[in-house]
Image 1 (cartoon, rainbow, N blue to C red):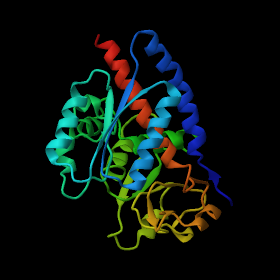
Image 2 (cartoon, rainbow, N blue to C red):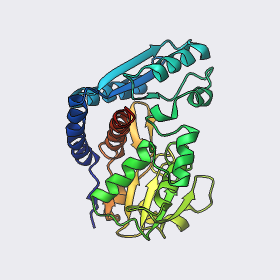
Image 3 (cartoon, helix red, strand yellow):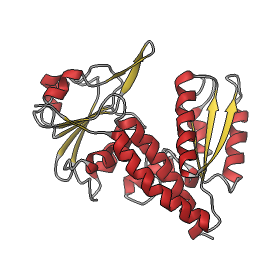
Length: 287
């Protein structure tokens, strides 16, 4: 068996094509969607990621608003940018690129973000809405994983999903999202992590595995039920090389597999654009 590739680049392109029409409709009504980014310091991967987000915006006609702060910026410097973006009607949604320098309080800054402009869907208000099943900005990587699986016809409803990783950006919100009684959800979800003995005892029972632990090669072929869908959401760096939580050999066992590059990453960026456009649409509705 050779796994079908869960091609995030392909699916993201379709999402962007749909958004292009919605952006033009907004512009026709005098509203140009705007996405803001806050970058503190000169972390290379973070800078590259922010640049990709702004290139995505340019292709769709979304305006970009970027605040670059030095690595020695103070907490007040960050709060001043947040206040400016909160008050700026041209910024429909924005994000603070993680990680921050260690002397800054990322969580404290996040609390000051207007939940309606929280493009990452990680503000406690928006996470609370997710738990309640109330509509609002969804965390981008979980929403992207859900959309990727749905596009390729991987059944989620009634299936057993094992998420390896309990982080705030993927593991915990994805578990909540996939248990909701909604289309492409309504699953039985188990959350495990690297501190659990014999991870394979859990993953071998899964119809869908989402590896999001940031541990290279953690999921091996003997840990996967033949034909299962495997999403490689966790990555880390070995030097300058990006490595996956999922070993290459898994492709010979799984029914579906997202690639190390071009899988979950493009879907995350696409969902940032979705959240931005939806925020602009809400601006129109509110007059």
